[in-house]
Image: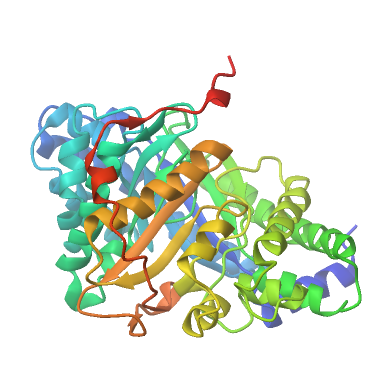
Length: 451
């Protein structure tokens, strides 16, 4: 039986506490679109995406109106394009333009999957695609790209790490007149999940069905509001409170996922129960940590608070959905979180502290603006450090940094919308170039041998 209190509570969370469904993402397999003729493959891709996702945006809007639940983004993820490029050869940017055309036709916010999985080495199409990423992102508006350079089972491909440091810098330089936005649409992973609905890292894994609906929920404002009401709770009582709140948030995601699945005639995949912040006031993960008792995010104790928050979110959310996946936890993207922005501006939050926090949260060093003169080798060193945390701990980690070309520490980049704005943060000036240029592979850890 529907409880009136629960209905009113949900309405309050939506109106006053920034609760929303961050995304419904349709994953589409493009394996049957591959062809030796790249132009034919691109035509196949455009036709299939438009056919499968024709009603995605419309359906999302219908669910919003019926249930009063904001669904901020409608997105598509596709099979890693490097796999198709390996079949066809040719200029991979043609695939980027086909994906962009499809995204514009169906009206989605983003399309992800201009991706390569190179944790064990480069296969046909991988190098060509990676080398084309800066140009592809500079020529498109809706396209997102990701490269997986390591995993717990495979180790870390240091040659790919070196290459990605170069590509991040090139992407920023090609869009220096547009706030270096291309780098903001490029993420480098270790242990990338195949069912992630969140951009820029979403791609449709080869083990996924032909078409699937995945949902990403949000809710930092709801959690912060709940914690603020109990200033005298012990930390274990706070953890229980967060678990109960995460359950309520995830139930809404489950409802939307099932409803979208039924209306579109597509299998329902997972709910990614991550706390995904926005630049909006009251919708910040950093503010949750400060509500728990930190003077400022980045203070001593930040990593411990975040570890508790992340664990409680997962424990509460997992019981609220038929299937949980993706990244799931708490995101800490600096430019997309009002509290993180403030903490970075005043110097309370540094890249080194953020790196420590990534050991216990969802994903990693995300949407961090760095000085424009940062070398590609330094960017590669940042990627390698973050990948090592993911590899050793058996978790997903990622790097999405934006070299602000022509800007220095204290300057800011303004992206607008959900991407927000970010202060240029200090990067350690000591060079890792000799290490990065050694190439080869960092071997998988001993505990990867579990068979």
